[in-house]
Image (cartoon, rainbow, N blue to C red):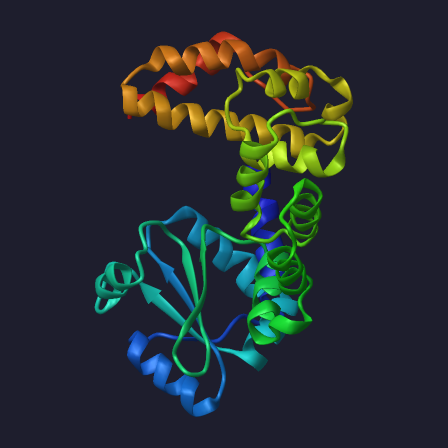
Length: 282
């Protein structure tokens, strides 16, 4: 309850700064308005039941810097993917998850598509990239990489820029790096980023190395984020196989690592397994 109350206070204080001004008509109408205004179009494709959509609406969309930049540089549209022209837009642009963010230039051409909730910093970086691609470090790094011989050091330099800018392409190029050079050195900052983005099996030797190194626990947000990644990956596999045993095995394996973290009111392993089971069987 305390966390909910604090989140509400944060929401109220941030809301006073304003929010992105969204159109609520059709995509065709918004594209016409953007063309007339000679501005790019930003589209938030959402669903009313989508948790990450609500989270982004209550945080990134009301961030003062994001609000100022998007209202000055974009025409913006909120599009319910399940109503009016939403289903048609979903089909036309291959959208299968909420939220999905679409960016069109002033001529109505799709120039970027981002899947999943974004933090304010990510939203601002993507907006700046669309408005002025030549001045964006990711754009420059991409041009450099595409012109290179694509050796390991070339890909590594590009991944570093993507990681530094929290770019949505990081997962793609981190996966490419890991596929080509799987013997990652977790003491190398860039290869550690590759690991965090591309390795999802908690049983892999690299995961065991990461989890067993107590130095990594100091960055609790990153450490718990990786454990959450393992939980979500295993959950999807377990649901597909209809096997709670997979989840139970994972909890037993990862619980000692949760105990290393400063988690208030962490339940016992047995209680945690029961909780995970109740969620799994829903």
